[in-house]
Image (cartoon, rainbow, N blue to C red):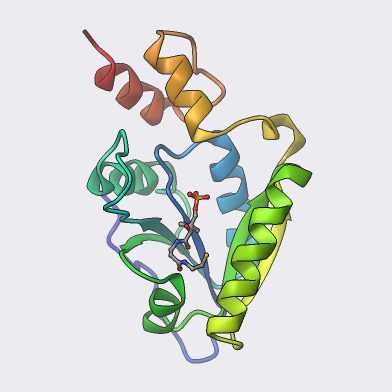
Length: 171
Ligand code: PNS
């Protein structure tokens, strides 16, 4: 498995964080990761370890899946955080948050988050990337629902994730 923070950090490196629940990572997330990785020297995919939610996959499972599906991207690492994102940003010496926008319905929530993070730390910028239209309807929740009822999630999630979903919902 990919070591956390695999690429060395050099002074002046532009480090961005792509935070989320990733329960599990979908093809839509992976598309954002691949595109964002081209824009920064280093991209940290950060999984929220939220104790109040009941996720399908544990944080370690989500991190392992993310590490597998990004193993060909040398400037991408996978990590997790527990409290405020801005605290994780500071600890990671990162100033840019990357978020994907699928539709106008995402926009209100995203603006609220970006404004909150900016209020908490004005050095932090959020940049939005449009989700590839082919994944604009896709979410981890939809994928879980399809998999739970034994539907086909091929093309919605990477193969490793599909196998993990099938194993989770095996009778
Ligand atoms: O994939 P998600 O669930 O839409 O990601 C949401 C996430 C993890 C980015 C957001 O909930 C978050 O950053 N939570 C950490 C707590 C925090 O920093 N809150 C203040 C900003 S809203």
